Image (cartoon, rainbow, N blue to C red; front, side, top):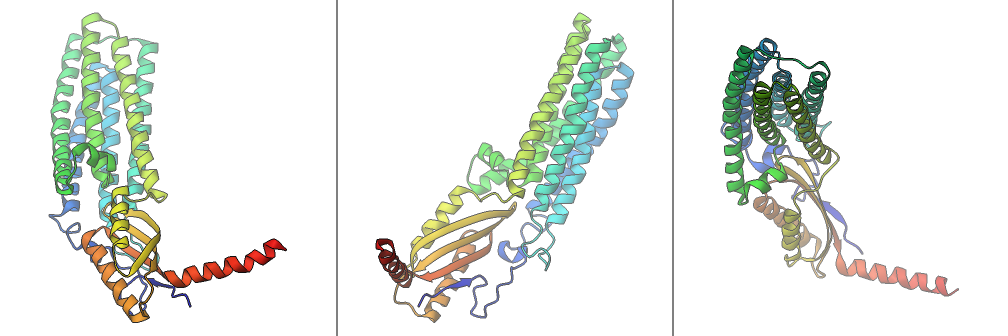
Length: 358
């Protein structure tokens, strides 16, 4: 007889209700001093910087008549709106699991990050390209005073954006150090989409400001508006690319991206090393949030264990999994008796053999 059961809650009560998010990871991410609190502070810093810069760029752009400066103002508008999206994502994603959303609201982070990417694409990238094309069509000139105003505004913007970028970089560095990996790997994995978006926005903003300053300086030196128009178009292309990368990452998470392959390999090795487990027939993962993963594993038992021993072993295995990898918030183990399963497979094969010969 094949033993087949889902061991999900760990106790022999048969409770299979998913647990709220905080039970698996503790309270570190929900606490004001935890990672979410740090991310909120980073987003607030970016929002404050963008609001100040947006006003300065808009005023300076209209006074100087600079298309590159106006495109940078559009970039800051997009960034400011995006910070609001990101703040909403951090707050809403921490809601506990309920009957309608038994796996929690962790994917809210990815949804709002997708909206932020759309905002960067439309409000920032498309408007910047439009400004550049208009500058090519209409030409234009600026007074010496206009040049000075524009360059002064851009210099202030560079300082503010640089301060916000530094804050984001320091948080990424701390997260990378805590995880024992390099910063580049931490950025690529993008576990916290809000932090990743702020980092991308601020980095792009600094590059965009430098491009705008170069365009204005060349325009001032040569009298050719084409330099500023090209700078505006380059800023737009850069924003569109960043929006594409952020949107692609958010899409992958929303449709059910697997966890880090290294985590999967480690869990597979751990399960395969348990004396009660004969083999691991399947192991699937899906990221539920920045620090939450669903694990579903099919395992064959070593012959000779009774039902009570199996239950106790699965409780121990599940507890050890969540202790070693706190991000494993939901763990489902589909257990079968390996010897019984093989006997059933052999019997089915023998039954099919005469039919095939006939």
